[in-house]
Image 1: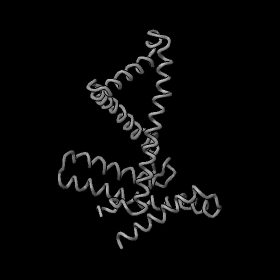
Image 2: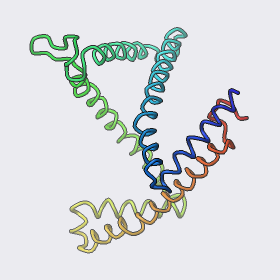
Image 3: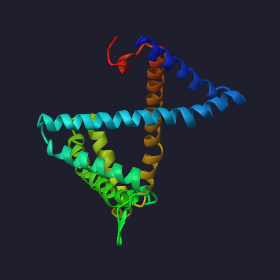
Image 4: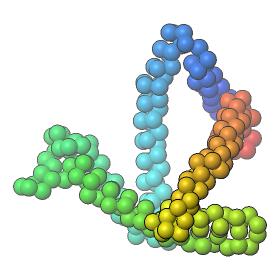
Length: 219
């Protein structure tokens, strides 16, 4: 029963999710809107609770076992508790019953988001630039014909997008634009088709019960 009930629910909701794309009947569209706007939100709320509980359990276990970088788990737990109290009791912009302002200092959720989350995200993306440069250095080594073609194309595009490219040749920017519009778009569409076909095959395998790894086992 632990396996059959989840497989049955996946089959039913998978079919229910497919039918509205092929039928415009008001009853079917209304059912689809109900599932999207109500059922999925309820499921997402429970999933959020389970996810947060799992997150805290993992980090408490990390602290208890003194695993590598366990000190940062304290930062996560403290931030989780503080932001939860402010968000639940103080509100997003301070409209809750918990005071979120001391004099001219505000600390409601919007302030925390703009002054902590946004700078941390900017820092993360800034660090990604160095990882991308390192990955590009390793990928652009002319060890094969494909790598050489990638290196030459990347060099042409970078030069063509700079003001220097127009001075080298007035036709270089238009050639770079042609590369971006024709070969690049064609390859992106091919990748998109491959992703779509792979997603379709995986979805059918899950709906039909062929793929069962999401149940926690291979059988």
